[in-house]
Amino acid sequence: MDWGTELWDQYDIIEKHTQSGLELVEKYVKFVKERTEIEQNYAKQLRNLSKKYNPKRSGKDEPECRLSSYQSFLDILNEMNDYAGQRELIAENMMMNICIDLTKYLQELKQERKMYLMDAKKAQQSLESTYKQLDSSKKRFEREWREAERAAQYAEKTDQDINATKADVEKAKQQAHMRAHVAEECKNDYAAQLQKYNKEKNQFYFNDMPLIFNKLQDLDERRVRKVAQGYILFSDTEKHVMPIIGKCLEGITKAGTNVNEKNDSLIVIEQNKSGFERPGDVEFEDYSQGINRASSDSSLGTPKGPMDLLGKNRNKNFWLFSKKSKKFTPERIMPTVTEDFGHLPPEQRRKRLQQKLEEICKELQKEVDQSEALGKMKDVYEKNPQMGDPASLASQINQTSQNIDRLRGELNKYETWLAEAGGRGDTLRYKSHTFNNNGAHDVLSPDGAHSDESTPDPSQAIYAEFDDDFEDEELTAPIGKCTAMYSFPGASEGTISMQEGEILAVVEEDKGDGWTRVRRNNGDEGYIPTSYVTISINK
Image (cartoon, rainbow, N blue to C red; front, side, top):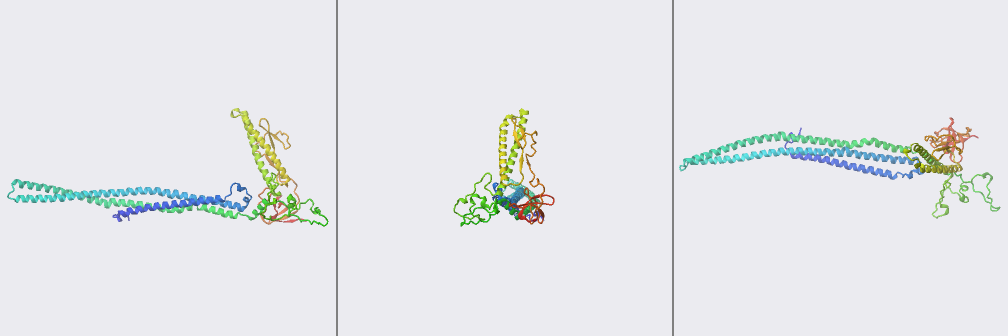
C-alpha cells in the first residue's frame, strides 16, 4: 500500500507528518549531543580526580611509593585515567557517527522534501489556472448565448412590426445571426476548455500527486531507517569500547591482588631499621660506697644501646614511644642534617651513602663520556680545520676536566664514609682520565702510573664491579640450616630468592641488621630476611 493510492486526498496530513518526522531526527540529534557532553564532563571529572590523587613528581620519591599497596593505588589511578579516555572515545564516536552524520542527512531530506512540495504546488497551480480558463470560457459562453437570444427575439419582433421597414428587419436578422454565431464559438471554446480541464484534473489526481506522495513516502521511510540506525549506533558505540573498559576494570582488580602485605612489611623494615641494639640493663649505683660508673666485664667494648650512640642523651632514659609535649625543649630540636648523613641511624646512613655513591658514579660516567666526545671532536677539528676551530673547545674541555676531578674527590669521600659506616656490598672502581695539552686522554692505572694502553673505546664501561665479598673467599662451612616460612623474591642486589618451605644452609648469622647469609645446594649464596625463616644452628 502506498500513499498515492490510499492518501490521495490527504496532502495536508502528509505534509504535517513528514515535517514531524524531520523534527524527530533533530530532537534525537540534540539528545545525542547532550549525551556526549555528559560523557565528556564525566571523563574530565575522572581525569581531574586521577590527577588530584596522583602524587607530584617530587612525591614519587617518598618511601611509601615502594609499598605494593601504594603502587596498586597508582595503578588504579592510571586505569581510571584510561577509563576516562574510553568515555571520551564514546563521546567522540557518537558525535561523529550519529550527530554529524544525521545532521548532514537531515539537511538532504529537507531539501528533497522541499522540492517535492514545490512540485505539488506547481501541479496545483497549473490545475487552478486551467480551471480559471474553463470558468472564464463558461461565463463568456453564457453571456454570448443570452445576447444571441435577445438578438433573435428583437429580429422576430421587428419582422412582425408593420411599421418596420424591410431594411430594419434585414438588419435585425443579421444582428441575430451574428450573435448566434458568436455564441456558438463560445460554446465550442467552453467545451474545449472543459475537456482540457478534465484531462489535467485526471492527470493531477491519478498521476502527478500520487507520484509526489509516493516519493514523500519513500523519503519518510528512508528517514525512519536512518534514525533506526542511529538508535542502534547509540548502543553499539558503547559496546565497542566495553572490552577495553573491561580490561581497565580487570587492571583495577589485578592491582588489588598485587598487594603483598608481607613484602610491604619487609620494605618498611628496610627503610626504617635504625641498626641500633636494644638498650641494656641500667646499672645499680651504690651511693653508700661511692658511685661506680665502670662497666661490667661482660659489657666491655659493647654499646649499652642507643644511649651510648646518641651522645648527649647518654644519661637520659631511652623510651620506645616518644612522649608528646607541647612545651618546647632543646631535646625536641631535629638533628642537623650533615653531608655524611651522620644524623641518620646506622642502617639508614649506609643506604643513603650507597645511594649517593651511585648518583655520583652516574654523573661521573656522563662527564667522562662527554670528555671523550670532546677529545674526539678536537682531533677531527685538528685534522680538518674547515669543520671547526679546535681552540673553541678548550673551555668545554677544561670545564669537563674540572667536573671529573670534583666528582672523583666526592666519590673517594663518600666511599670512605661508607667504609666507616660498615657498608657491605660491591665496591666501585674506576679508571682515572686526564687531559694533555692537545685534549687527548691519558689512561692512568689505579696507582697513578701511565699505562701504555690507547684511549679506551667509549662503549666500554668506565666502572668495573668487584665480585661479591663472599665470592672472593673459599666456601665456608655451614653453621646451621633454616626453613623458609614465607616466599622471598630476592630482587635487591646481594639477596637471594627462596620459596616457602625451602631448606637452605646458614653461612652467617644475623649481625643485628635483620639479614642472614645462606647458601643453596648448588652453591648460590645471598642474604635473606631473618624474620622469614626458622633457623637451627649446629651445636
